[in-house]
Image (cartoon, rainbow, N blue to C red; front, side, top):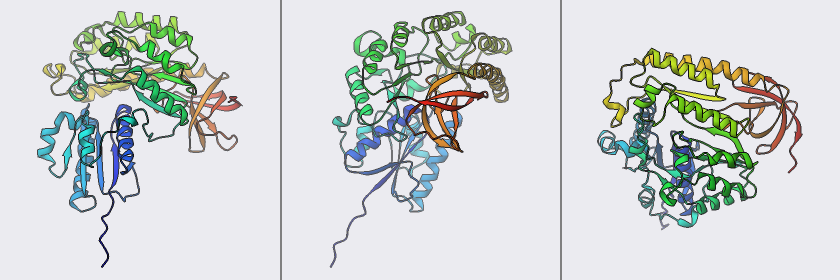
Length: 441
């Protein structure tokens, strides 16, 4: 009589939310595979029997989408299509008790720092030797690098400290080790991310050490671009700008979420700054790093934002002429400071204001892009899509900024290579160009 063989588990990891969540999923993927478990990220094969959903939970629209996704997999479990469903990440951290009651089909919920507990469900151990050896879920020529976790800021609208906890920096040595491993495996660009990157080092070293980290990463052979995201403006460490100006492989690019252009609303947001201070900082950044591309995000409809305050923000955008801008509508988040304030701006007004801001920015972006016509830029090729090779300049980050499109019918580019591209046409958010010279390797 033949012995019965047990079917081996196959795990599918589904990621919802931001790039920080993607990094967490990549770490989870590495740990599972390092323990000999067959795991994939967002596999379409349909042969998995275990699903892990890594959740976001910051704004209402995202939360509803997440709940629907969890319910879909809970139903798949009831139908016998999968054996187990686990939920981790921000939503699970914040609403674990409620979710356990509402969706009992889920086998277990885990918070944002519960990776060892999640691994135990697979009889797996957290392998410290895998630190820095994260498996990427996208093309290997760029990689997000999370330099810290959590946040200590008191922003009125933000629930991230509730979900991610307080600020915890990763040691410089550990991050350099990760960068070396990435470079050895073909990564050319590091995108530094955190809830608040400018706070880096205060907990570990008792002072801000983002500039030191940038220098250390800049010395890693094989890393051609380093890009800084999510730099909190209050207390911005200006020495970072000196490093950016002196090191060629640190992109002249800064993602600095300013959130509003009215001093009154910034005070209500508990941002610790004013419009005047923000404008002075922007001019200082531009003076110390000439030609820098500045990306920011703003929130429309925060409590206390009347038409006057909104017009101040419109004026702020027109004056500052940001290279890149994203706008969110205010989400009334439970247990945040702003939740105690009246959410008086109707949803349709919030959206209308966001649309007005983006209309202003579209014109600014169009004018700035028109100035690029005839100029030549170094471009990193990300993908081939819709008859074009698609890449980015040093002034553009992945997915959120401008793309450079090269006609694949007339020119060939290799994914992950740098090429020199002359811009011949430009729209609000896309540049069209032709390769004039591949960069010598």
